[in-house]
Image 1 (cartoon, rainbow, N blue to C red):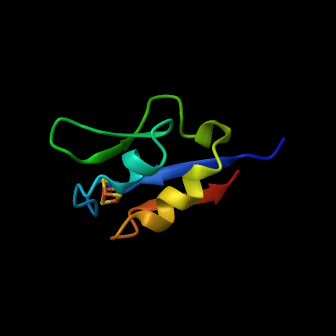
Image 2: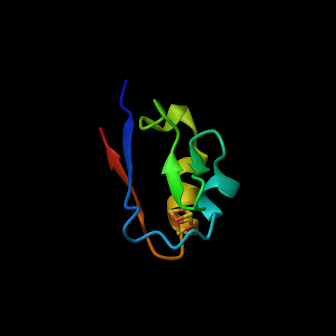
Length: 67
Ligand code: SF4
């Protein structure tokens, strides 16, 4: 089965929270409000919303690569 591999560049993230709002199964925000991928969810957890979240990020901090 093909999957994806998600990476989130926290150095680029501005804490807008769009990722966690769009795909809460995969993204969350840390204590400082920065986006992060939930532990073990780097494979996207089968969520079609992952690409939507990547598009929604205003600074393009999220990369979705085919695995
Ligand atoms: S949408 Fe982008 S800028 Fe906003 S919290 Fe997520 S990664 Fe950071």
